Image (cartoon, rainbow, N blue to C red):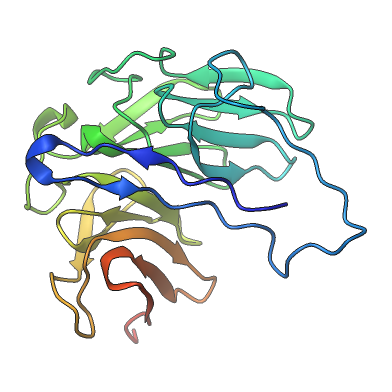
Amino acid sequence: MAPLRHAPACAHADRGELGHGRAAPGRRGGLGPRDRAARWGAGAGSGPGEFNAPGGVAVAANGDLFVVDFYNQRVQHLRADGGFIKQWGDTGEIGIWAGEFNYPTDVALAADGTLYVADGYADRVQVFSSAGGFLRKWGGPFAINIFGPFNGWFATVTGITLDLQGNVFVADFYNNRIQKFSPDGTFLTAFGEPGKGPRQFNHPIAVAVADDGTIFVADFGNNRIQKWRPKAQ
């Protein structure tokens, strides 16, 4: 299965142009000529199971897919065969209140089915229960699209992932850092600063955490991947 196409994005005008978002990686190890593939969507669309610039994807243990649908302002929940189950967000409608999105960019799924959504230009994280209900949100005052450089605030959220303990790691694009939170959204730590040197970022766009706690960051503007090891306890 080839990587998903890049999702073009238009950041807040006062923050410059985000350019092209990341493409979701294909299956580890690549595909051989005898591998079978399936796909959903053919051209941009806004109906159930259709997409307009799909971004991040999370896969449940049963094979269900959770897909960020960037320009459609929603997250779709699909069966492994592509059948539509439900969605979060109103199709094509930008919003700042709970359950609404402003160009969502990524998703992460906890072991208990809790869904974490990087609500990109709303500068926040939204969290939903396994049943689909809204649980909480964080990012700036009231988490309603107020961006800033402070702990727990964001300036365009472009990537999100969880570690084995359920802690949440967020790529904070224009603040040039990664922030770490507990599952309930409590700020724990942040790392990175603007620059080209070690431990510096030029717009980190994606983050992943290995089972041993090692953190990998796609450093977009520096055209590199950085690897961070957890501190010894």
